[in-house]
Image: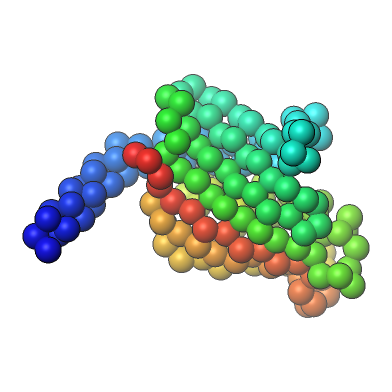
Length: 172
């Protein structure tokens, strides 16, 4: 019992030290990467893999982001952030467009919402983004070290898209 408590205390201490050392620059990197990758709408940065997944990478300084996802409708994937080639943070996601709504009308709006994220909360999109008859909502709990959430898109107040995500620090 004492060993488990000591191990948990050391883990929390390490997590706290890591968080203090890197959280601000990590958030800045995630913010930059999210705007430069999928949310940018740039198809040329997407690489089709032999397993039929798609990979997008982004590097800035000592940080690298690797986003790999399967499908298009529905879709699922994960983003991993590396610091000096060591995985330190990840986000796993799964989403879909409701069957009675055309996906080609949803994903451009999603990209625009995701490009309106903030440096303070850089994963996925902002809490709320509205344009025309569209509304993006992002409800989440936690912080960079450990979080989860759901995002939804509404057109004319009808939910047409939803996704769930979860993530946090890994292997630090």
